[in-house]
Image (cartoon, rainbow, N blue to C red; front, side, top):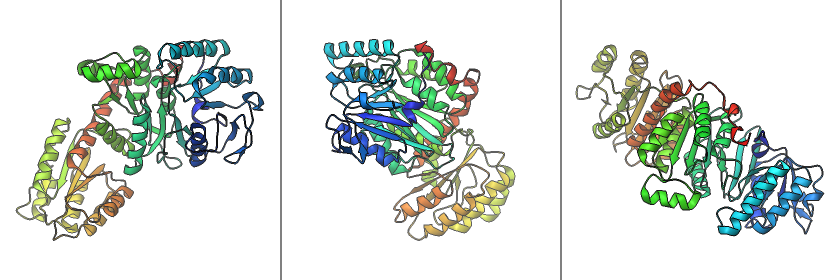
Length: 483
């Protein structure tokens, strides 16, 4: 059976079964998030009391939804859900997003309900997302949609952008955390999927569909369990051959594995097994939520990754040293400066400056010294390096604003990818970071985190090249487990 997921991400019409006006109810939360997302399609609230809900005329039953809708979002009590699904099938509604729990995760009674749902779906040709999930968000600028009771929406991307991030999670709580951090850090998070019990649609199904969308530049996953490892590998490799897939696997320790088994039924795996599986999938693996967020920052700006050769440009020795250590540990190469660049800098920099990689311009470096070094790198080092990692320490005797203005100006026409970090007491941090970000330069508080981001970016091209041996597209595998 073919599974078209467009109705779950970009439906032109939806029914909200259990809709309400109270924003603290599940049905009210769904209606509110649809409005906040700016959903432009037809909305039919279903509530036995009828009336107007969030400005929409409601109907009192699913049978009264006329004509049928692309998607029914179900947020009623668990013991009434099966009957609602039957009514939806009778009305010709084939795609169901079920948010409440009370199924496979809820003991014998829930397991029986889950089996009945599967039988009904098979008999009537339904596709079910969830149950026991927090919903789906897809903020494609061309058609924004959010059916979720998560508390907030992610930033999304601008029209025509191709660097949107998708987060597919087997934890609703982590989905909420990712949205919060995306807003705080201005990450171009566009799609968020809470997988739930995955009666029909698992991580790989969502990955296959989102991997085909031009607005998505990278996919990030939180995974605890996989039902079909071979299909997951095929889908992941097909996506990774064109855009990065970054994954955090939960349950890699004995204690974590037991917790994951209780949460999703996961089978415990050790680090070596997860590493090998990720390599075979073309996946960039991270070991913590913090690293997953670092990857989001990195791939949100450079979705195709970067090479391994890095130049560190710093105005302070210590931060340059720890950045260099972290860069090497992340697999980056810190090659010596090209001869022509070194000769120019020895003429232009103070004798005490370190003309090496890392460069140390000294703490009192101002816009002229930063600018001259930057121009030397662009004139003489574009063939030697794949990126420049800039470190800017702000001592009391130097005004940082002119330095930032000069670097942002130069960044507009830079011929190497740039990242920028600032350390110390930063009274103008928000403004300075915003200026660099507007110039296309991702900014970091921490030089080690910047080096981590660079290392993750450098891992993807290697995995992409290996994954490109998997010729089929994600669509070839999308429905294999359902055929």
